[in-house]
Image (cartoon, rainbow, N blue to C red; front, side, top):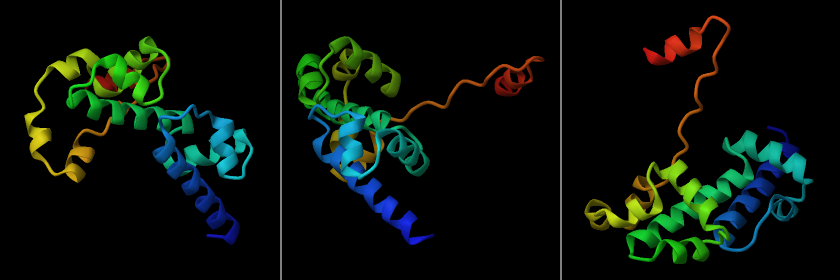
Length: 150
């Protein structure tokens, strides 16, 4: 790895740490890119290459992760939404459902006894939102769809 690539990784890590720390603040890609000393477009490409998702996607995943912890603790959906920096309850609910597989209200309403019994470090790992893999693209002969149906 070249010294320039190492420097870029250090800058990306600084930006990722800023997202983890400041997730509840109004962040956007240009603001985060400044922390990495890169243009927004270059930063987005490098971030995706290094971490496998866009900076905005990473930010929203962290926000949903923190919101899930608040919902498990008994916060209302609206309070959790606002506490993690989301301004639209509808967008928050859609993203929460996409990442967690159930609505925020359903998540809040069910028991989380197993998570509450875990040490915090294990609970964070066990409850981390994961994006589902992309749907297979159909080809002219439908081969991708048949392989996915397996």
